[in-house]
Image: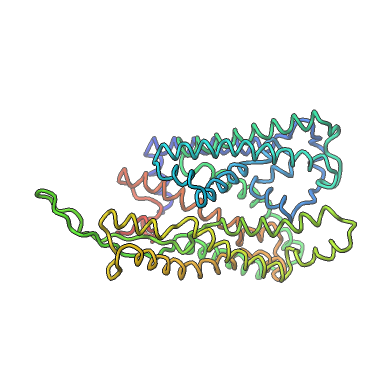
Length: 443
């Protein structure tokens, strides 16, 4: 089989084998730390308690850290403070001249931005750690008291440990990127999400065995899941290529240019960020309402922002479309691309260089972003409809769409492409020889 042959080829390359084993070892360390309970927290009480946060902001947070928050572990914050700091720095790059200047300074500027991101991670981790200690000290978080002595010493101790643990997880991610395989930060998030898959799968099949659904319906649901995963793969790798012609230049006796290259414009340039932004905002009202369980007016509003309501799906989908265009505008600058092409002597056939080229690229980007935005919105609300109409368990429905599936597919494809490049450099066939990955097509 092709898969077995590819695995054998990986084993024939010592460097690639060591990189994969190194990445797996560090990921194992991360998962091991997510089961170590914070000092001062009653581990037995946490294990027997049922967390109250499932469909709110804390539930989303716990999804990304692989259940570490509901276990009150030392890795409760996971890598999320680093992600938050990276997003803030990236947004500042669109509005702050200083950060824009650093982005254009090459390697030195990138190191300065990485340093700023690390400092921001420590600050955000300390603030979030304080919020976690407040949540742990509240009986409403786990349905019972899990901290026997919630005094100032526990707060200080927990904040220091959680902040230091976040820095350690950030270090693990950087080491995986440098000495392992794939993007370490993304792999840490993906492994945290996948950690919930076996338990969710068991819960789904248990509901079938108890008679809630028959096997025919379950087979149809699994076939639908395979089709959705295939659609997400197509959405992730789909691109619109714009041809760029380079004029011929004669330097001495050599002729440069004259070739045709392409600008690959992704259908889903924004990736998973629109769903994360929209979901974070949509969870804020339900999280705020949960702080007022006795207020009748607040509880009457909870139905509008319920996870399985039509209003929730409509507002959520609309916000995803908006944030897709917003984040695409930040991540891809047509004017900068047009200026770079003009400096390098390139032009799009039939389009004048300069502003006309920028407008042409912006027009294409706007048109291809629309189907990508609508597809993201449909994928994001799909788990809600499956839970409501197909009687799929909420945990298993998360793997049919939304943030979980997009992250798993995106990180998985990126890691496979890196393994593929290592194999091809040593003249071995990779995993995607018969596929249509863009990295294997001729330009």
